[in-house]
Length: 330
Image (spheres, rainbow, N blue to C red):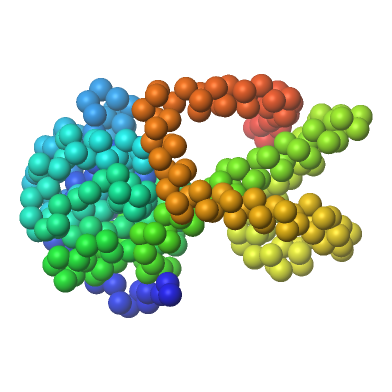
């Protein structure tokens, strides 16, 4: 069973004496690098020369180097790279510099859990996953707060792998609520949550509701405001108060209507399709398809992206947001 780690069980000294290499200066990599540096920890940034990440690292006061050059002198190596390319980049540019005794950390268990990345057997391999974007992590820590996070151990050669991973959560600002889990659980639940709810379920529900109102003769503007714009109100309440607290904050009419329609829309057939999604994630089918898609240049992804951008909700949304932002400025 996952365990919530008491903050008193985290020893910051285990990471304080380490030289940490952050490989990749994107969403997570930037936040980790800045938060660690603010803690007084030595950070080396490995990044492809000339890219936006390289420019951002220089702008933030780092002196980025190649991935191998950052890895070689480091005790602790963090892979903050895209899931689909992590294994290939690791094998080609990092693996030779991963000498015995180092610690390898990933922010998401995808590549290791599904067997794309096979680290050597004489190093610690751990996971530390903030439950939020890198930008959100940086903002929370900059404002004196901590973000919830997960830790897991894949290989424990030193006998201190868990302690070191926990210490790293202190370094990046995920120490107040840390859940000890497994690579498998972190990976599968993360992918499922993205697909079934956050990035798949919610957008499709919003579009379907928008289309239903417009097809019934109601204005796209009203449909947009009701089905997409006001979603922030509810998600903010859910984040702050949970389901019951959200319902306490809305009208009785909205609560009654939600109970009545929610069960009609999200029935056992939806759960059965969710089980299908979960099954394809757990079996590795989704992971294999995604890695294969990336090797083709992500043609289908780009086609889907272009197709979605042409949906009517995007046009009305751009127009309304532009007006609302102008009003906010005034």
